[in-house]
Length: 383
Image (cartoon, rainbow, N blue to C red):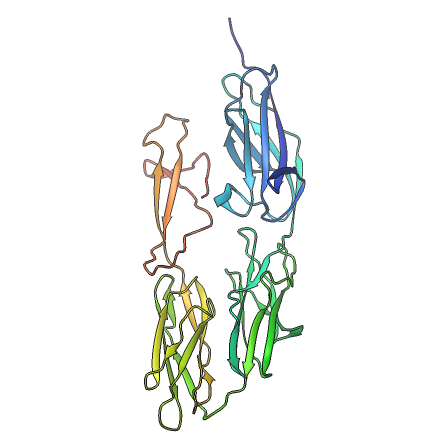
């Protein structure tokens, strides 16, 4: 008796979650989680399908998955691989299909009818790098750092306009390439409390937004009173992320004795994180590790005392270079038969010794070689 594999059928649906409930969708914003679910059945309804299903977007292969013990499986698109996404579909219209490979009991399926999925521009989170209320003196240089946090691996581009109340401060500034930061140094001449906000221009992937996620930044401006002083801030031109930055300050005056009081160093990545420096005959210093890579701008603000007026230093820029993590790869088995499957796990460790907790994100590309030569993996994974 010869038993031949029977016909298989495959169904494809797409859904996202809302309040913990799966919702069928055909349109989602960029970076939102989108689950492509397949179910493979035999024509007789007996048995459970095993094997692989391959997903395509038109002629482009998105990836392949192994069916679970129920003959089902999912390919996940979204902005965060830590939550199961293995790809992030770009903005536009996509024609998604799925094909089953077959197994010992079931023939390969025909390709599912194309499912049209539309990815629309997303709304980024727009907020200041730090919302600690600031106290400055009139005409002190103030560095504003806005963050445009995207929903996927494509970072927001475009410009940001900072506003004092509803009035623009300076010209729009571009988001720094390769980051989600926009920075501008401004001065505020009017004493009083200022409510600083920002407006994002939008681009092809992200919508324009003037909604500041955590509200505006409060800045109180006062006039200095007393004998004029000069405040100087000295910093290294560059450091590698994870290393300590030393902020050295000096306050001088044309008259004796030396100014007393405190100096507050205000780094753009964490304005309220450093304790004030008590002056000892003029100079003082403090240290802190940067919170992230990219340009960091700092100013030093002298408080003044009973004789001397408050003053601030010119802004100083420190370029914080990215650190290089260590990567280790483990396999679930040291040897497998041809056509067999093996699980690969990549572990990335940041070379940080300063106590700053920051771990690598984004994706890992696994590479293979056969006897020292190039060889493609059957599936590329991300973590």
